Length: 73
Length: 157
Image (cartoon, helix red, strand yellow):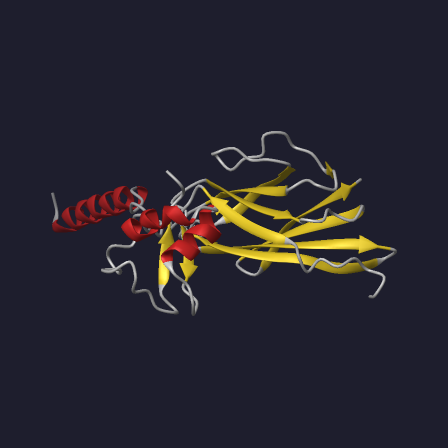
């Protein structure tokens, strides 16, 4: 496939009018997730507020946790 | 009246009575009540999330729908696929973007989103390439919970 173009630098994303579920990976932070999901790291508080039932401290999230990602208000 | 005559009269009366009884047919036994018709249980409504449409475009609004549908893009465009779904529950929606040339296909990108809609919802996937898209034929396949639900072809010119 050497004659095929290189797509390794393609960037992608998604958003929804429904809540999304994001599974925390090693090295994630709420601001990193907000950047990935909303394109804006400063929106981390929206994720924190939507997950107050499982998050007590925005600095403590763990791999495998499933966070609700609400649509941007 | 002699005793013989009396007997004869009794026999005639008995015969008439018997004949009368014979005329009356015994009423038919009541028809057995029809067995209650048990309607088959309605099949449960399809659970979960199902895809209703896929639309491609260069931009989406706050409602995640493309503002102007197109299947032809320029090299510098961000390409959006807006997916409408119905149903409630949790679903994993995957967009598989591929490029085709001379009968060969190359993967471009795969993006997955787990959504938990409570009714009709719109989910958008987008891809961009900082150095521009190679011209040619592309396709996006949408899978819902692992099953292919739709494909859309588009061109970059």
